[in-house]
Amino acid sequence: MPAYVIADVRQALDQEALVEYRRGNTESVARHGGHFVVRGGDMEVLEGDWDTRRIVVIAFPDMAAAHEWYESDDYAPLKALRQSASETNIILVDGV
Image (cartoon, rainbow, N blue to C red; front, top):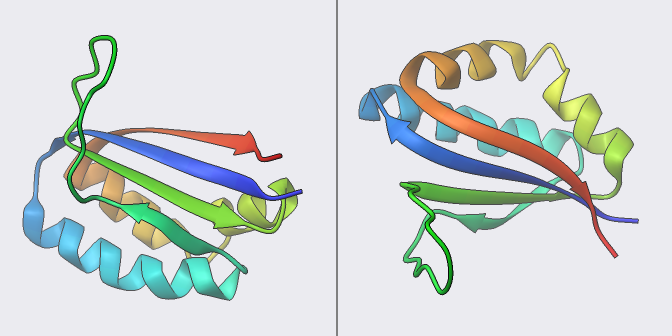
């Protein structure tokens, strides 16, 4: 069953660092069988009060693959870079 990592970027603190993060993360996600479904772009709030700057959705073959990526040695320095350069909420959900 596919699984999705959904990132809600609340605040970007360092744009240059985030560009570097995106460059490295593209390869890291692919190495773990994932691909980007949504990576920023125009968005429109249809209901509720959602204060976000950027939404990212990454599809993985399953929850295990998503965990392997998130906890991997190759993603660790990228994760630290992102955490220092942004305020982001991230969830992992099972697909249907």
